Image 1 (cartoon, rainbow, N blue to C red):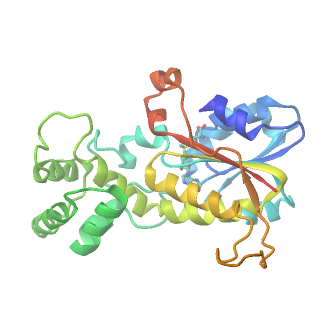
Image 2 (cartoon, rainbow, N blue to C red; image 1 turned 180 degrees about the horizontal axis):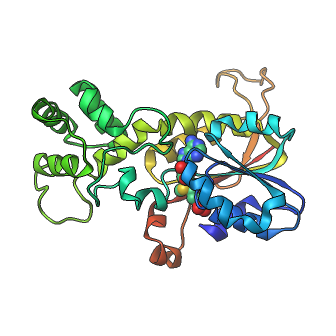
Image 3 (tube, rainbow, N blue to C red; image 1 turned 90 degrees about the vertical axis):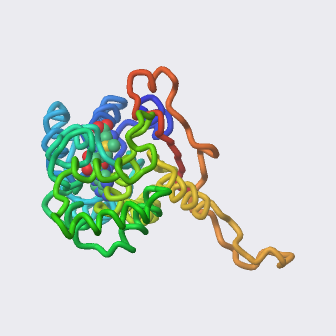
Length: 302
Ligand SMILES: C[S@@+](CC[C@H](N)C(=O)[O-])C[C@H]1O[C@@H](n2cnc3c(N)ncnc32)[C@H](O)[C@@H]1O
């Protein structure tokens, strides 16, 4: 959503911006091109994204600093750079097209590859670890909670049965298992029957919802008065957290409703700029089908 990001972030000349989800640096490049003398801090937990972004932003070498970390660590990076506050921050959540389209990263059931799914392949459990080691009850919980999968219990039960014969190590093994368990799984339909299970595992492996929750609440305190935070989410679980957090931070009085006069004197931290989430235009959806599920929300620090 390039136009919408610029519209809501509204970069100013000489401003300091942080892109917490650098990816291939498409948005970062736009921000740098949109006004003179912008300073941009770029973060990504995926070393491959940083490598790509370094190339894409080569023309802006003197204006950028790129860091390998998660966006909830933005405050530490800013302290190291001796930057006190930001004019704006962007979080374009989720997985990148590059990650999805690189078979060996194991994000997609479209390719048969090792079950990995870590955005940062240097740390943490892989999807194979989770699928082969977690209790059935826990697997069922994440498929239901993070994938909103109706057949969560059945799928978890089949995984536990199958791994006793042979561990599930490939995306293809898991996709096939889910397809067999889900009623009508072999019928062609708009989405692959394993979509929800893959989404759930990815969210779990990368602690995506925890990152959004802590990342946003910390981000608000890093903005200058008038500084903007723009967040793009790609599924309802993420968007719900963003929407709720923005609502909380924009609250003034938090006295119990029965008190006739405000006694808390609580002040809103932010103003919501987008009451309703902003969607991609039909023209963008036509060229980039992933943008169909994108929802953008923006706030401005009081
Ligand atoms: C949707 S892509 C961003 C695309 C980018 N806006 C562009 O224009 O190319 C999301 C990127 O954010 C990274 N990412 C996701 N969660 C992150 C987190 N908690 N901290 C840092 N990076 C994260 C992913 O590794 C991925 O490269």
